[in-house]
Amino acid sequence: MGKAEIGLIGLGTMGAALALNIAEKAGRIAVWNRTTEVTHRFHADAGDLAPRIIPTESLADLVASIESPRAIILMVPAGQAVDDQIAALAPLLDSQDLVIDAGNADFHDTNRRAAAGLPFRFLGMGVSGGEEGARHGPAIMGGGRAEDWARVAPIMQAIAARAEDGTPCAARMGDAGAGHFVKMVHNGIEYADMQMIAEVYGLMRDGMGQDAASISEVFARWNRGVLQSYLIEISAAVTAARDPLTGQAMPDVILDRAGQKGTGRWTAIEAQHLGAPIPVIEAAVMARNLSARLPERQAGQALFGAAPGPVSIAPERLEQALIAGKILCYAQGFAMIEAASARFGWTLDLPQIARVWRAGCIIRSAMLNDMAQALAEDPSRNLVMAPFFADLLRRAVPDLRAVVTAGIAAGHGLPALAQGLIWFDMARTARGTANLIQAQRDFFGAHGFERLDGQDAPHGPWGLKV
Ligand code: 6PG
Image 1 (cartoon, rainbow, N blue to C red):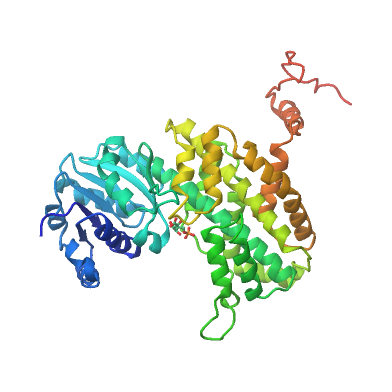
Image 2 (cartoon, rainbow, N blue to C red):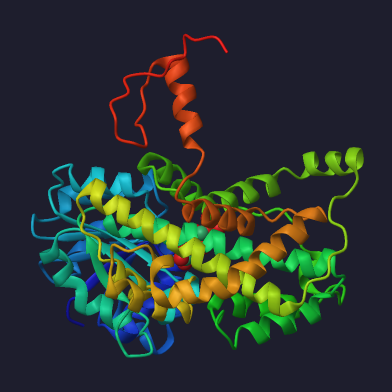
């Protein structure tokens, strides 16, 4: 067999799936895993694709098996493992070889690695779509030099998901950490989308006493409308599933304690650094953190009684509330990307990001087509200002308001939906209340303020006693 076009390190779930995808759609691939047995088992299980896979037993072997200049994908856990792998590869590679970190790296780490003067070329690449996506078509968000991306773009476009119009969902987002940054915001939106779906699920389950099977029907119906998306589709599937052990609905036997690997939290932290308001995502991260505190919640219920009481809301209104929440959340996410673009000098292409997210990734949805179009009309305009989405919001916000007020009045925690509404109300109020904040700041700290009439006003007359 000739040499491989590309190599891959790390045959965990995602790495193995990506390697098979490459072998199937893009060409020969050499693979290496720290545990040799894993490499051989992977090769033995590869079936028809085995002849296109070169299993290797050492890093030197791997490097020798790849056509020069080489491209090697790292699929190892984010953080120290990536630095260790880079250090191990350094003496083996030439300056024209290219290492691609395809894990869920913190974009700051990718920036640091890209600036570190590595003895080879380096790309950071966000890959979304879970195991299934990695195997059959993920969304790919590249970051690094344009010429380095161009070298591997044909492979990435061959293995990526395709949008309905046939465009591959793989593109270079910008320099250095730009790909991992966009993937991070994708994950923040993923958290928020999931949380909002869970909130309406809670209203149906606890407020209206609907069982999982009937909730599943509602989700399935929504999946044929404006909300059509992977996350609504899988919500319909998981609420329809039965537990083989007890025969109960599957969600009813699952503990309400959600894990997280950190990308949602990174999004919230980064948004604070950027001064970008993303309250729906922040609320979703908060909800996950609170979900993890099960003993505290149990003690709270014992002391104060369970909160959620009955509500009566038509499913059509819940659907509209979710439509509004989704638009508001994405508008915040895209605005955060725009803020980062300016801060980091990346010139991130918002319509292109929306296009890449149309297929393959976890947040893929029909609405992203419209978002791509609205952003293409004017990338610097907030999504809520685009006529298409402004129209949707005019119709949907009254239902979001009705759902949030009814839900909160009955004791349902609806943090993400409520934060969407609060942001919307504040973001469309020309005269807010920060004039009082400015007066307070000037009073205790002489921070100054601007006057409405534009006159000079060094400070307020705070010395006067009233
Ligand atoms: C994806 C997912 C994937 C994974 C994340 C989030 O786009 O394929 O976002 O990257 O699900 O690690 O997981 P947590 O919920 O554990 O943070």
